[in-house]
Length: 435
Image (cartoon, rainbow, N blue to C red; front, side):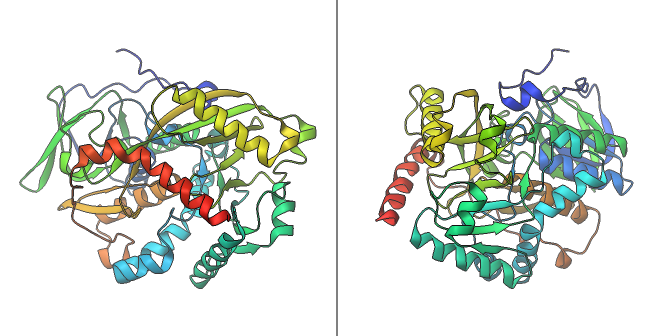
């Protein structure tokens, strides 16, 4: 069995790799089959195994190989653009429950890490998440968001410019929303920790096992691998998100065409010296601001700043995006100079046209969700647990699972080609807001 090769990243470089789980070697039966070993699939497998179900988790590559092991690791209890009132108005009672799931999603992740004893694996720091306003006009947006989340009982707080300067160590921003339940993790470490916890509760994980499709046979789901093995199970959870259709192009083609996979770039600086860390983000919060062309950063456990960005066009992307992110850090923190990026990597995030996630029931006892829109860390863990509860028989009218039917985007291949140009429009909006 050949080892799965991980993309080069700071997480792959520093995170101990366990022995690779063997691929599925023949037909099998289980109470539940989970497809995809990212945050959603691992959280679902853990929840099902804790409930006493026999769980098989099938992963095409390796645990955390996709977006779950490549992201920035910010644990953010909000969505990118969908506000609480909009969720409630769109989905009614299920939307109200979904608001509470999103608002509590960071606590859910950190609570699971503590309960399962994987905080060290995940390098978990629940130091808060801060969204600084990049212009005076965006402070009004921050105030509205704080009020919206406080309406649902969550501890969001508005910081003025003086408080923001103290928290960030720079006067580059104008105020913003602080959510103390957020924070950051080593995403690959969290994925591997969740896998270890799920296995400890009895789940069986098979890596290097791509799934080709599934069908309903009687009262069971029959999941087929690309080499012809079958898993027969009562319950099924599809947890492939942005990589649906990327590794096995014919897998769930209709579902894959409901999102546009967009390449997201991440990077890490060299470790920041102690004398600089005292003046740069001293409280170690996770930070991502209100720009459309987002500026985001936080420390890791080795005191590197983990940041990222996006650029137009495909030429020499890694170098150009690293240069851009380094300039952005230097602009906010002149004492840092222009930092060197030790690691630069990328992966897909799944974008929907309106930036709402999509939750689908694929049939009896079968669930999926898709469209993380850059908020998949806390949301993936929370929704994995919620879908596991759904297939375990918990009443749907008590769960935060607002349902919709998959609707492929018209001209999907064209949408994929032009998606990077969305950044230009976002930059124009940012510049207009600054005037």
